Structures are given as structure tokens and as C-alpha cells.
Length: 295
Image 1 (spheres, rainbow, N blue to C red):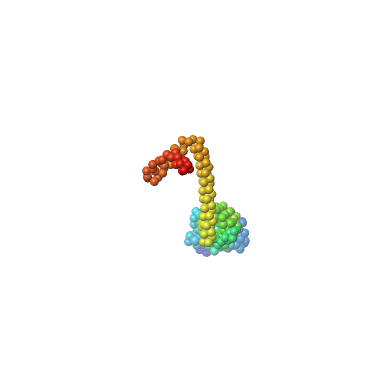
Image 2 (cartoon, one colour):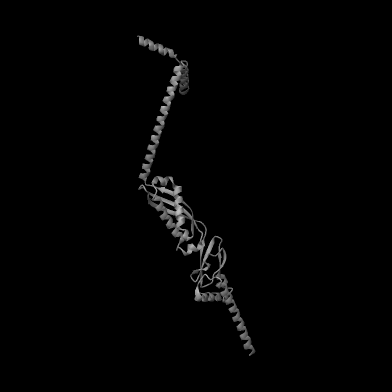
């Protein structure tokens, strides 16, 4: 009798400890009333916690997870997001059978946009590629609102690149890369806000146009340069003629200036050709002209 009473007492103590643990667990999880998992859900969560207690301390190694500084964990309890927010960084507790979790990397992602065949506003075909840099700022939105946030962002970047560049002419595309990149970034940032994605920067890397169009652009640029050179040469001739006209007027007013200019010209010719020049008086040419006229 005494032995049976002792066994009953020990059994009652064990049952009471289990009940106390279970009660503590229920009180702990009832604090979060936003889950709305229902009675069956509470029963399953209680059984999961009981399983952890029975297999303690072995089960603790599978229940505790480590989340890095640049990561966040979205925990699902019976299919619902726990506490409606991401966990981490640090240690998190995941119950077996009822909890699952997904880690989300919050670091900036650099994604290359493949070359896109576009048709500009002035009907010119071109291939354009670029780079988009983005990061996830809301792990819950990135997991709950889209299947694959990285693939969705890349596909949306390709579509946005084609749509925006299709409204620009070739000249605008070649000259306004920075403004077009800012426009694409603003469009992407607005579209991916519901996915928890923040687009940091968009760059247009390379623009490829057909060889025939390249030759036509080169010929147009060469013709423009030649026209500009002719205009500059004509302006120079006009300015030179005006300067010569003013110089002739000055020489006419000063008779001694013409012989001085003559001697200066001879000095320049002798220095350039490395030769000896014998100057002749200018009056001699005048006398020769008079003799030939008189004869």
C-alpha cells in the first residue's frame, strides 16, 4: 500500500509539472492574439511544445536557429506569419511540425539586364543593356506578396527599360542616358514598393545600333564638321580682307611705311628659306614702269 501510494504521488507530481509547463506555454503564446489559428491550432502548437519538452535537451538544437546580421527570418506558424513581422538578427525559436521559416537577404543585389531589342520613337532599332541595383527593405512583403522577388524585379526591369526607351528618339537616347536612367529607376521603385524592394540605382551600359546607321551618323557628323570648317574659313578670309583694307589705308597715309613693310617681308622670306636676299629699291620698279610706258 505504501509503495502504491508513493508511486501515485510521484505520478501526480510528474503530471502536475507537465501541466504547469503546458499552462506556461499556452499563456506565453496566447499573448499574441493576432495569429488567429483557432482551437485546433492551439492544440497542435501545444503538442509541438510538449514534444520539445519531452525530447529536451536534444530537441533544442533543432528548434534554435541563427539569423545573421544581414538576414531576416519570416516564421510561419501553421501557415500564418508569426507576429506579422520578420525575426532577427540573432537566435530565433522554431517549433517542430508547426513552424517553418524563410531567410531573406537584405544586402544590395546587383543584377545585369540582358540586351533588349528596342524600337526608338524615330523608328531606329537598337540593342540596350543595363544594370539595376536594389535591396529588400521588408522581408515580409518580399516573401508574402511575390513568388520570387529577384526574378520578378529582373523581368520588370527589362519591361520598363523597353517601354521607357521606346518613347525616346535616338538622339535623346545617346545624349540623355542619365535622365533616362533616373526615369527608369523611379518607375521601378514605384512598381516594386509592394514587394518590399527599394531600387537604389539604374545604369544604361551600352547602346548598339546597326552598322548602316553608324555609317550614316558618321557621314552626317563629317558633313557637319566640313560645313563648320568652311564657315570658319570664310569668316577668316573676311576678317583678313578687312584687316588688309585697314593696312592699305594706313600705308597710304604714311609713305615711309611701305618700304619698311617691304624690308620686313624680305627678312621673313630669307629666314624661312635659309637664303640670301638682295633688296632692290622700290623706286626702281616705279622708274622702270615709267620708261616702259614712255617707250
